[in-house]
Image (tube, rainbow, N blue to C red; front, top):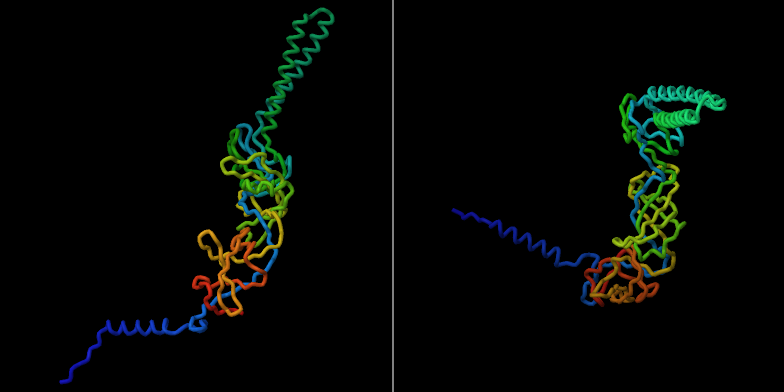
Length: 351
């Protein structure tokens, strides 16, 4: 009887792993070129050139209405009529709401009647006094009565005026918060009113940039609500003092906002242009920091990586200024840096 042959599963796994290792590590990738027995590291390069550098100040700001107010009740009564709806544009002095004013109207009429009667009595006492038929005291008492009624009338008329709610300036109202028939008390909010043409932006600038900002300076604003769009405005005021805690100064700018796309409360990214000049710029990823120094790898004529120390100046997100150590036209390695060392052969990709 023939013996059956069994293959250990572990043996199969080991063989497969060995084959994979030979395939992956036993042969160099296509992009790796043999040079003098060393494998050339695939890299990408960028030519060092002098270009325009826009030195900017970046900040975060909050959009605010140019003018803003809560439209509130001044007295207690029932809402009779409402003349606006949520989101309406209104003009300065426009009537927004009326409260039930029947009692106030009657009060004004009553005081007017009493005042007219008191004035007639004052005239009569004045005539009697000229004929010595009335005393000075009687005249003075009647004059006090007239004066008191005039004061009462002014108060009553002021109360009557409070029964009507007007827009203090032109703008756009917010959500309506009351309905006809509602009982309101002093301070109850009918709605909000915002003037957002123009719109204000408040932001803080670090103390070290204080000398670089001025009233009238242009600012550019970006909002996540409108990706890729820029809104232009100008600085209108700078606070008179530096915050001792944050070491920053508060700055206010205005944007025309005629289309009303920017709304109060929006978070805006602010850019202030300090200067425009010429500089040698490199991607920040090209830098190789060693201790307290910065290095880059440049491509030599014989396709090798040569390490060079450079001096770094200003920075922007992803970009650095090189002030010393590089010459225009030198090719700087910007990708594949992790595998490099000084003098190693390289293979330039993408050329």
